[in-house]
Length: 134
Image (tube, rainbow, N blue to C red; front, side):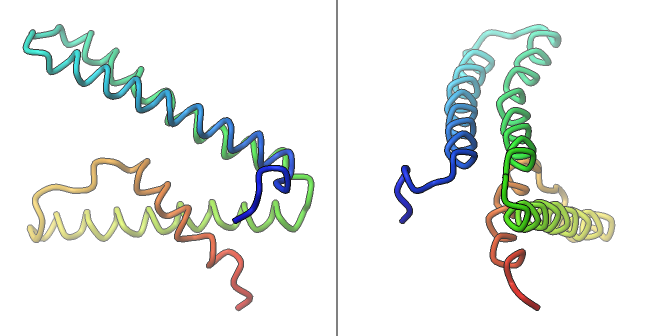
């Protein structure tokens, strides 16, 4: 495990940004869901507002990821991270495409609803592939 002081400054900033966005996401999502499902009926505009507010921290995480691409000062590391993000996007699109065709042929009735979560998982999966020397 790498100690905090050994991380490059851009990785420290990235880690702080992601942790802050994810902490705010958990707080906003749990609060919004508790409010929305609290037994009182809410106006459609209120629910739309809650959905948009809940999405903001996830949008912030994507901003942090692309900010990291700008801040990485080592060109090789930047290339590897760019490959990783492209692979994560490709893996996610493949997953969603296959799922949609399964729905077209009535194999499944619903599809993945948390594309951002799938993409983040694929970002982790894509790391070793981006560094693989094939």
